[in-house]
Image (cartoon, rainbow, N blue to C red; front, side, top):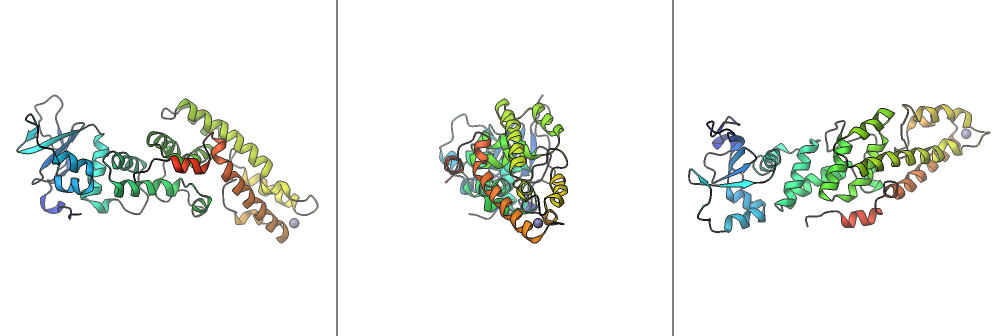
Length: 316
Ligand SMILES: [Zn+2]
């Protein structure tokens, strides 16, 4: 892959310059504007001037596009080809940053809308490296194996910046791009948020389909019923630590609507109970987690894990 051109050397310093202010809908320059570039990409009203060679090195779709002979009526500006893209300007900007300012995408948490843009365009323009890197953010935080889920320990999100609507956005994105294997945990995380106000916010959400809203709310009910039956303190014998464990049971379910079924074992659960009951509790809790993991897709009316993984959209 060729080196990316130096942004310090050639890039126009001020982004969002109006290119044609006389127009009713003036075109704007993006921050990705290299004066010696040889192709202008237009998305919505935003134009970026970059290099055909770099686009082609990343994407066979661009390679094919630029290998065609120019049409007689080809759109040109200052001897530079102009390509009109049907994608969102924001998505194109993220894709170009990945190609030309690679260091902007760090190993730390990324905004969901950036991850979504890279998945969308990484797939459309067949750019496996970019697609896979964005996908790894999503599959790290919405994993498809209990082992990967366990690796989270008590950290909620590692690769995606946490915002209120993150879980819902994950469901919507998974539906859009057929990323089926992230759906069970995306649904679980959406259903597991506490408080009845959360359930109400699901009802008024405008991005989830009516069916997915129903799946979240019905699944939430089923998870609570399962938790009520299966949580480990239920199985303690009456004549040992059951009375001492009762406050733990109560604490685990506050605030109202708290789901702890898939949480790892917590040290404060074993406070005040004997060693034998503690070991018993760990065994029961881990067994419950494994059982729930296998039935999680069915709770949200999804196919089994293996089918979801096999049918998830892949680029290679
Ligand atoms: Zn005991």
